[in-house]
Image 1 (cartoon, one colour):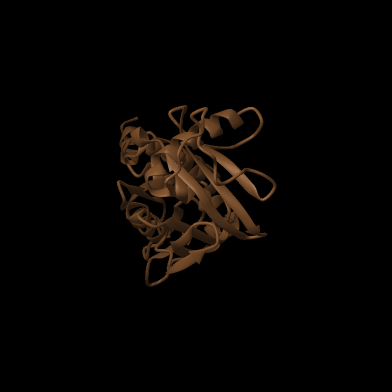
Image 2: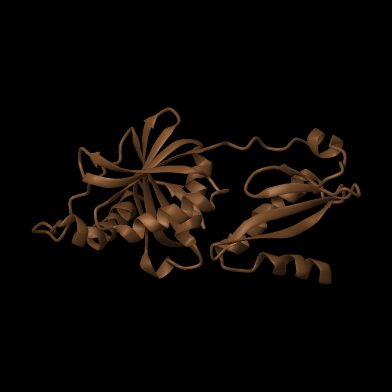
Length: 247
């Protein structure tokens, strides 16, 4: 899975996918295409609205338009995943990656009749490290009555070598969190294990990457990235660990 900002060289791709998005929701928005067969877009990209493209296996798989309301306040204005890619929590993973890119205050709105979208966003927000959210019925100036979720995404500070080396065992297990689900588990016996927390089909799982100090922080982050690449390709992350043990 890759997320690429929209620029002049891929704007046409974004606009094509946006037409698919508008067509899918036209039953709720009551929009009709113009004489040229095109729908009018509700969200225009610009200085305060950034477009992002989702790629899965090098194929264009979706889009997002993020409105920057203030310096650290954002709204998911448009979000779309091509139906053939809507499996194995691709939409959830896409949303989570967006939030990790832009920590701060977020809001999402769903128009009347989009109960399936509301359910998706409830599950997706909760799955992001059990993030609490506020939900309300809101009279939007453009859309009328909508369902709105508001929540905050906290930026996780990365671990430092000093923290990894100097944190000692306690009478309970300790977890030192890095980023992207990577953490160091310090057991009561003094052993230190790198572990990765991830979600598979909406279920939270974890896998051991290696031991510290045999695997330093820099290598743990590389291993974390490789595992996330596997997850994006629907490969069980535990298989990489089993393969490594056989070598």
